[in-house]
Length: 299
Image 1 (cartoon, helix red, strand yellow):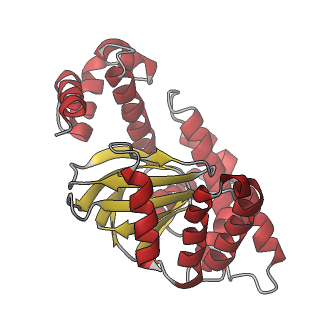
Image 2: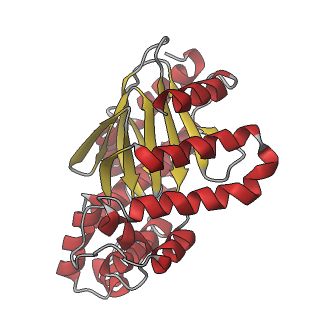
């Protein structure tokens, strides 16, 4: 099974050299490839199953680091900024991965249909974990990737395979955590709603009280549960979103340092530059020059 998935992912990524992530004809299915170990990069993870087919990777959410390698998968339950690195890859054995984004509506439907739903504890747990990738779950991912060879079957078969994936996740060792993603009435879901509000309004002035009201919690309880779920405080979450968006604007040439700072919500360009350098390791202009050089040369 692992060899079959490795072969088909390698085949598809061979036909699109240099493209990673590689979007596919299956909505929400992406393939990753890197022929070399990479420098750490900042990105935003969406709720998804992130499977390592070959090689190894680590990802940091807030103050928690997760290492995962071939035979394992990272499960992300809420959209979060992160710091990630391909830690094991070479031209002969490249890092290969498959990402399957979650459809929370279908996941909720599968949860409701279970005869014995997983036990969901009341407190908010961490919104990300690593699990072994084997058995029926691995078979589902293999069949999903194989659908790319029969595109006419995708609209009919892909949704059914997705339901299988949710079934095995919900009935597996982390079923309770997966169920929290889908339960609209859970405390976790209300905190997630507040997180999405913060995500959509990250340029605005942060008021913990407003976010806590969305989560139907006191400010102190919301702060505690937010950090339990994302491994960072609301302010850290907002700051990372702002700086990631600013870096995107600068790299695209859509703004200079001063206007990028204002566009993402900073009132002080000097404060923006300090926090930017702290996150990306260099001041904005130097970081963007290095980033563009890297993109041109591939080094």
